[in-house]
Length: 221
Image (cartoon, rainbow, N blue to C red; front, side):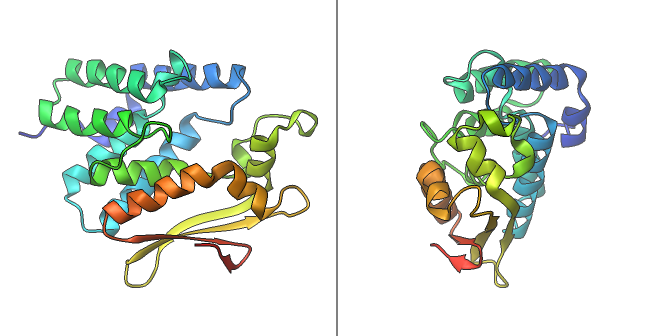
């Protein structure tokens, strides 16, 4: 059974937009990087790129985009366990929209498994969301002024360019980073994000491909 609940419908839904806006305000109050519309829309676009590139079913791809758009709403409750609380919130929202149970399962499973502390790449949607979320590292996500930078802010701010793409035969996903060494070293990047990058590698492997990183032109993995 399928539904007519599209990504565009979810993206324009005023209630879901309110949850995203307030979830971002909550993490902003704690000093975290941007988790608002720029992040979730970029994450959804990256999920689409990955799943379409691998020839996934179009509806599964759309469900992946829906999961990506809603994946951080649990931050409105608490940053801790936000993946799980967000999955429960998404269940309620999608159930009220009469989305079929099998599609709800696909969305909430991905949302509930995107945080690196508890994530598992259970299927293509979960894996694509993990990679899309964890590779969104960019200067524009930093809110703090330079005087109040912590190491996470500094590493994000140091990334002046970031892109994720397939290689020519689509056997690898390549994350290419340009890091300003005057702000943060490449080593510092991996010190902060190693757990996330290893999770991306596991997720890529579950998709039958490899995950590779280049930093300032040097292949890291």
